[in-house]
Image 1 (spheres, rainbow, N blue to C red):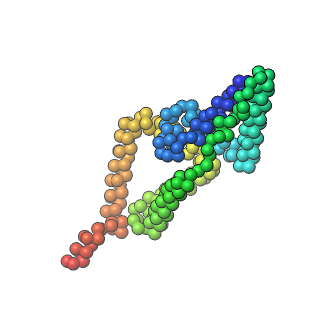
Image 2: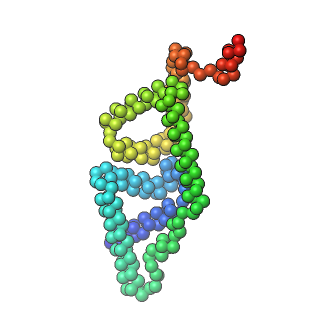
Image 3: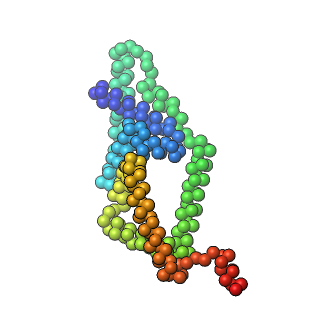
Length: 224
């Protein structure tokens, strides 16, 4: 019992460390590249268990059970520490005092920064979709169509939650694999990229509608 409660306290300590991490690119890279194995392991394990549970049960049930288990653990630990303090006649205070004093509020600057980044990404995403659907560049639109066609098969093989789980697992595995095998992977990626560029150029030549002449060149031809 005591060992389990000490494990629970260690978990709270780790969660407190996660809470204190700044929400920036460096902290995210630290997690997905497993710079701190304990921290990344806890985040990966907790996230994967939660996603698998959501895929098997409703979101409300998963939230309720996780919250109930957490509450049972904290209540048990609180009672255990109170009994221990009474028996040993010590006055250590509330066992979760340092966590109760953590500042969990979001500053206005941080909210504005997150909102600004989100708006910039949404605007860029909307502009790109408009460019693809309205065929600004026929080659890019054809590529987009091929990707959508592939997604129809992926959707037939997997449901949405399975794809989310696969994406989450890939987030914590592929970056580390790439980091450990960067040179060889880059070599193969360059070969694939060059081959795709070669094929794309041939298609652009075969489809005059896909060629986009610079404005200056078009005006020069018009003058002639």
